[in-house]
Image (cartoon, rainbow, N blue to C red; front, side, top):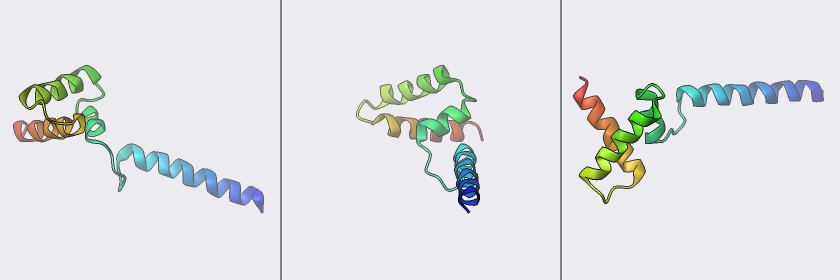
Length: 77
């Protein structure tokens, strides 16, 4: 019986990892979403965040990433 429970636990963990990776129903930070849009290019994502922080220095990093996402979506319609 413990072998079956272990197998179920492994499946649940793997499913959670896979679902998190594609963002199904799991809250993913704006910075992580921005990085995904930038195809993993951390330098590009950082430049976009810094540009938003330069526009408005009172933003938190997450708010700046969110605004960078919004700007990217608006500019690429």
